[in-house]
Image (tube, rainbow, N blue to C red; front, side, top):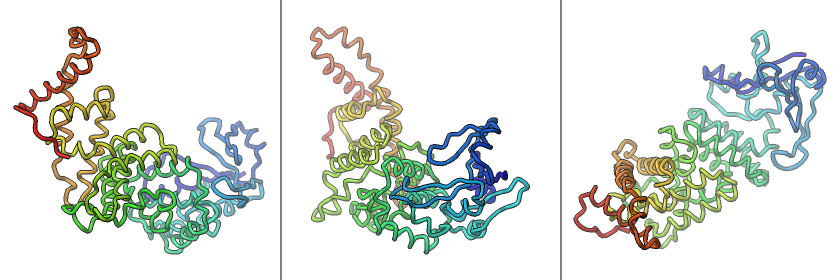
Length: 412
């Protein structure tokens, strides 16, 4: 029995990057032998075991053969005669197909160390084309290693996978899993660029793909279309270390602009309604978690009003608080403001421009929250009018904060 550290731990060690996860491959062993040593089986599709003390994963060396479509369309063979090189050959990228022996020897049959030095993401072999998840994985790695390029032959193979329809067999849960991981990388826009280069973005996220080539407002930089702007917004969320819901909201906030009628461009009248509709459909299709879905829908609907909040009437601001549930969900409202900040700064030359809406709205929310709703309810003889009286008091509190002599006309 021989045990090797494999995959990401070896790659990151060579790059000098931290990696807390260590995966092991066991060569020349059987499940019975590992069970005898106290290992606990956890693998459903192939033999994977947890170490009795460290709880790290140890997998028997295995080969795989395509037997159907999609991620689960494989049969596996794990036996003592499977070699380490055969196990490494089934992996996605050369930089992930290296192993480290117990004595420190590096095993690198597919020249992963060379590709690390050259900063190239290259597939190991033709078996790459058998698993469509690998398209998403290589796009995610491009977002993580932002100074790496994808080998031309790998891009060509990915295009073939898209054209053959293999990518259409990806299950929603796996698409979301890889998308969420990619959004949390250092340069998420690179993930979408790689997917777009091979044609997968149009198949997996057609709503996002439709933004490229659609002009922004005339007062923005003409060379920055809506798709590029969206990529800049996403990267702003990464630059600020935002949580996943903010990064997802950054991705979906302008989806409606991809369906703006050509005869009204570069204006985008009514795109908020279209953005909400498209975001709802995308979230349903990918089974997006509730926290990401909720924030994305709020962002799609209200980011325009938040941007111009200083020009809105006090009554409209209070209604905004009600519609976004800011009174009961202040932390979610804070994330909404953070997403709007990413949108505002996601333009050429605007990266560090001052953005006053979050400060103003947080101050406004504090003033409105100071209204004693319980006291108003007790003093109201007609209980049916309690919501109206509370609303009026909140508007008056905000007018006092703003020293507003009279209502200003609301901008649309």
